[in-house]
Amino acid sequence: MGNRRCALARPKFATQSASGRAAAYVTALAAGAVVLADPATVPALCREPDDDYLLALAVAGRAYVAVSGDRDLTELADPPVQILTPRAFIDRLEAQSD
Image (cartoon, rainbow, N blue to C red; front, side):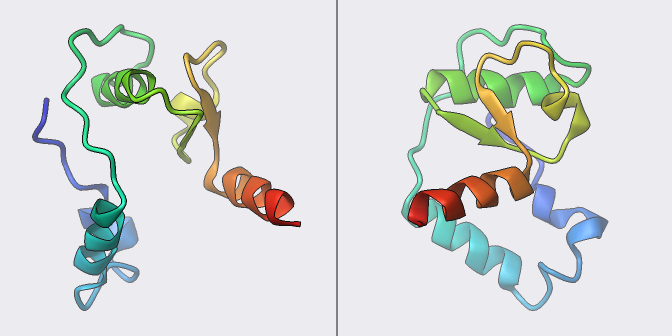
C-alpha cells in the first residue's frame, strides 16, 4: 500500500496547491517526517480501506492523534488513536502555547 494517492491533488485543494505550493508543502513536511513501513496488518474499522490504512499507520507509528476532516474517521465510535478535525487540532496547539 505504499503508493498512496496524493490528497493535495484533489480538486478541492486546487487553489491552495497551485504554483508549486503543494510540492513545497510536501517537501517541508518530509524534512521533519518519520517514515514508516507499511503496517503488516490493517484491521477493517472504516467504510474506506484507505482510512483503515491510515489508522493502522498511525497506530504503528504510535501517534498521539490523527488529524482529519473525513467524517468516516471523526465519527468512529472507538478509534485506535484519537481523531481531531483540523480546527480542533489547531485549537489544541494554540491552547498549549498559552
